[in-house]
Length: 429
Image (cartoon, rainbow, N blue to C red; front, side, top):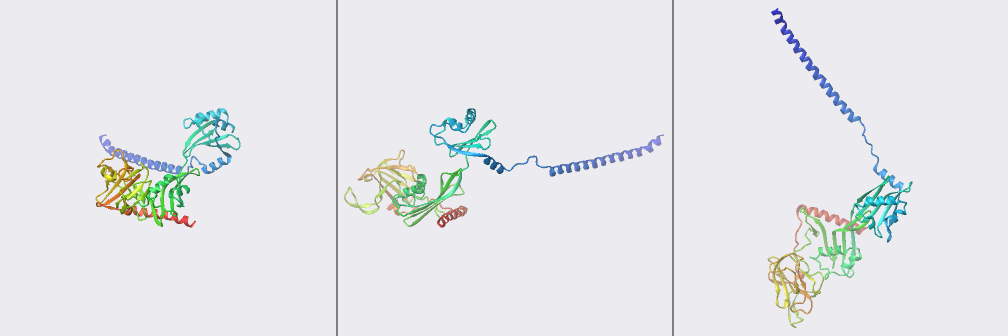
């Protein structure tokens, strides 16, 4: 008995091992087939399932809408209300009240003004008002769209488009008046005068026959010109000498105007300390003094101007003298660097807060024209010293404030070529 048991034990054990192994193999095969089958099903579903949504052509829908609707543009008359205008188009009092409530977060319809524009879209079949656009300003339009018996408002700022434009002209009497005649606005004219302020004195140097070519941005919205933008380039011919400026932003984000060689138009010194004046006496080694009645050197430039005309420092520097200086009357001396200094005499008063040692920047107002000291009338006596010796301010060649180099110069040269192409294109057209 015991032997039979001992003999049959290995056989049972072997059978169990075979059964266990078969079961494992069967599970593995089944799993592989299942996952392969599942993967194939997912891949097949993804490859043959069509999109759930089919979008119609947006432009066809938009075109159809405009074909089905007629637009009428109205202009509010003096004293006319929103209610009165819309009632003429068949909108009921209830509809108008509903529109009024809907747009309150954006605009009070009782504030419409004479001359204000409103566009009305009418359905060609039902003859009902489907859409309204009220022009609040050149930058904002209030839209109201009907959806069934409800009205939905939206405030939209139409996209502003910028197009480079050239404006040219020839000086007749003055640059300012001639530029105005060519539809250049005053702020643009003054900007041009400022960019050339280091090289051209626009009240003294300008001559009839001088010419200008200005490239700037012209802005459009809804097909209408809404204004002029940044001046991109200017070519100004003054007494047959060509002056050019090109707008550029360098790699450090600093913007400015440069000549064709990449030199900043900003110089160490302004051409003149006054914006509104005329020269009444030039630099001279022998001038008859109108009060002393004798001949003596005049080491400066006299600028005749009304009392109170602002006097600007022609360059950065520090005030080394401010006070009364004999025949110069109220006088200011500014030291700019180790080489140059400038003087400003016959002032009526000094700028508030200005003292000896004060730092000033180019263009800062430091005083006001007067006739203090030995003066026959209101004017500014402006002088310049180089290494302690008087020099003629009108003959000083002021160095540029900066020069473009490296990659900035390469990018700038590309900009110059672009502007040159605009000028040449307009000359041949």
